[in-house]
Length: 401
Image 1 (tube, one colour):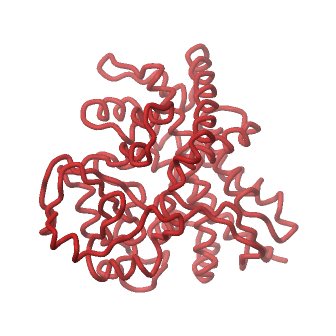
Image 2 (image 1 turned 90 degrees about the vertical axis):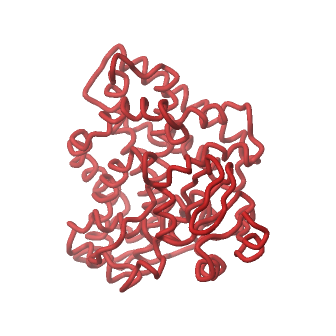
């Protein structure tokens, strides 16, 4: 990158705990330039450039270097992170993805939809008569954790254990990663132990469930090793739980800003899928998708050095006025695809899970929780890294009351 380029582009301080990907500062930077400089490399702010970079063969998955960026190396978490599917490349990535694909088939997920619906109804029933709830602890968290329990074929009663570990693991995706490392690694140890028990049980007692599918998966004579299985199961539990909980909380916050769309979803539950896509476009829990330059290359007139980390800002791209027209949030609008699940060869393998469970939950909530509004102090993770509300007290009117 030339000296002229460095001085002419905006700078965004990702390292600041108060930094927000939805701040006026980011909007102003997007107006000035398609990219900005950050302490961790470059940030891509506009939709066309972000989607092009998702497919650019000059880039590899960039999150693999996240621990090193934070001074974390040679630890159990760093080892797990380096072995997880989302951070692998080339033949290793292709082999693991081929082995894991069958477990994520829509057929298996489709058979679980009635259980997802029943679970959502049960959770709503528990607080419905009060006309209020703390949405994260009473709905989003138990729903996300119990969906994972259903998928894994384990007792739903154990949801609080996996929820706590998953929440603690999620600290690794924030800017306070290094200082939270002891808590993160304690959670990883717990999840590893849980995964080891699941693997041993399914090898001895295979069934028609997700874990059995992974244990039995075979391609060209190859199977997942024990280490690959435990690494993958921890990623599923942590990623699936953390993402769904956060995204449901963000969805509720978003719909409270657009009550007409909440009413529409309640009247037309078939818009559940559109609701998930629209929420993830304007308020994604994964605030940036990370890539890294394999070697020096030029993109849109900018010389980018090999090794440069590049963050594709999902919300900034998804709300880019250059590609988004009409109302800011509209379940009936035809939109460009958001980048909340990444893209290219690293498109999130678990996107079917997230889309399936949330598209069932949101319409059921909209049908029963009318006129939701904030009823107390909201506590949230920083609007960077992976984000979402930690505490979201709401009040609502009961349908038919």
